[in-house]
Image (cartoon, rainbow, N blue to C red):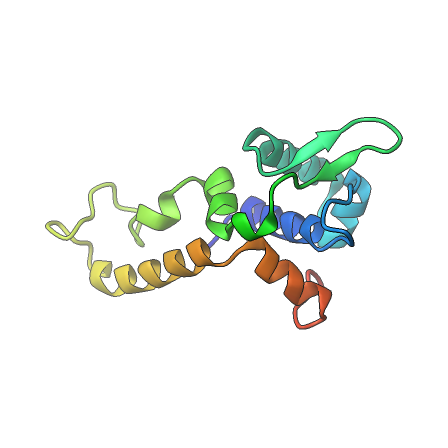
Length: 143
């Protein structure tokens, strides 16, 4: 459902949000290892998240990536939109260019319900919610 890049981006944001203190900085190597992603690929993803103003980066010996906003105010939908755009929120399940209520694809009406539910979940689930579940051990970023 999400691109591989988007999955890693969500995991990276969760990892950084779950660091002790809430505004700790983490380096590329630590993030890459924590989310089980190749470093070069992770670097590109982190650059995109910085460009989208979801992460900040600081160079130097005490540098790294960090979240500068309250994690209660960052929703998963923002991360998805920054990486994959809005296609998951508006696109056709079969990839047709023209798919709407007036001109539906064969699965439009069934998929619309799934898409609406997914959109609602992404727009109401904060980064804090999912980072807390990692911190208490009720969910995991990797096996």
